[in-house]
Amino acid sequence: MTNDSIPSGHTERPEPTPVPNAGRALTVWEDGVRLDFTFDDCMKYHGPGFPGGVAHAFAALGRALPELAARTPGGRVERRGIRVRTPFGGPGARDAFELVTRAVTGNRYAVLPELAHPERGNTLARYVFELSAGDARVTCVLRDDGIVADEFIELTARPDKTAAELAHLEVLKVQMRDRILERDPDRVYDVE
Image (cartoon, rainbow, N blue to C red; front, side, top):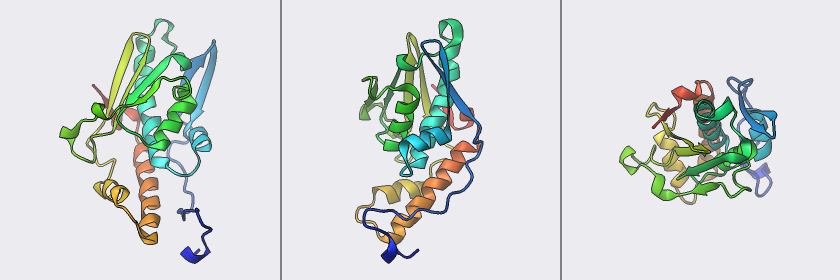
């Protein structure tokens, strides 16, 4: 497909590729009912725009939920009791957190720039997710392990991207998604 044949407002995306560990699921509870969400569920809710952001939230939840469950009476994390605070404002992450926790519509989701870790550099600073349920709290911080490419951060911030740069950005998003999902969550996010 050439750029001339792309409808206005449409982004050229790479051909879909298999999602690593597609069967992995996040578990929360709502009124005694177990709810399991896969990455594919999160993408269906979010849409095609930001698979990397969805993958970040999926990994942060995958890291935090077992920690919260271990600190919660009965070992069950109630979906509507989860609070999320982060400096990361990306729509993919927001939508994944909303689907799994309903924190956005429940006013339990806050984007707070002051939670960033600027000492970690521009690439890593905003990948911080604080999740809490009741008195239990877990802060997930992205590992410094090449998960987010400097090129991705630089290209995302560049104004007036060319069509070729936009197409390359879509490839970088999928590559980041795969780097995240091919690992267990504890190899993506550390807990502070």
